Image 1 (cartoon, rainbow, N blue to C red):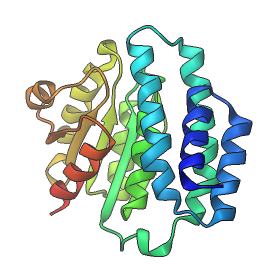
Image 2: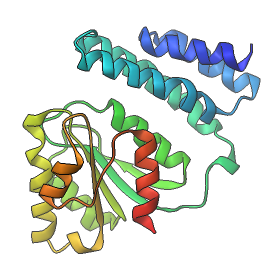
Image 3: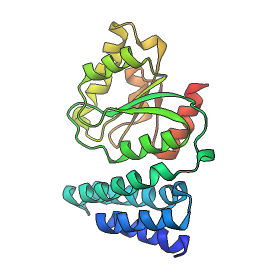
Length: 214
């Protein structure tokens, strides 16, 4: 099966939320010896973005988004161990990432976490609906280079501001860089709360994380 056919299969698996097709595709990619990074970059990530846009435009329901995310996650779980060693650079830094408290969305965050690992970062994904104090404790425990939070709802954005304040009160803020992302966030919001960086999408995140680590 050609790479082009597998890219089409991967896109369809995510867009249709077909977990069985996602597993079949991933196994074929592995069997054919195709670089999983190409499938993630050219099919899984763009397809998930398309689904997310459909949800934002009220063309796709929340259950549709969740099954798409499950299909994508299943494929990535199978593909990730087969990423060629040369694709994984030496550890560039440590990132703690999670979706802010009150927000159950973690689709984009999951993709970001995976791609950061591919590019050589040690990533601690705290999941979704993460309490602010958990972020603070993880920073104290792991001493990461960057803390990234995602917020897709305007009602949870305040948690990102609260995190900045709690990190400062705990005496931890000066030793790390912070980054925000998600549909509800903007560079203006990052500036307002004193966050170091805002990233628009996965590719933008990779670029800006590398800049922050320098």
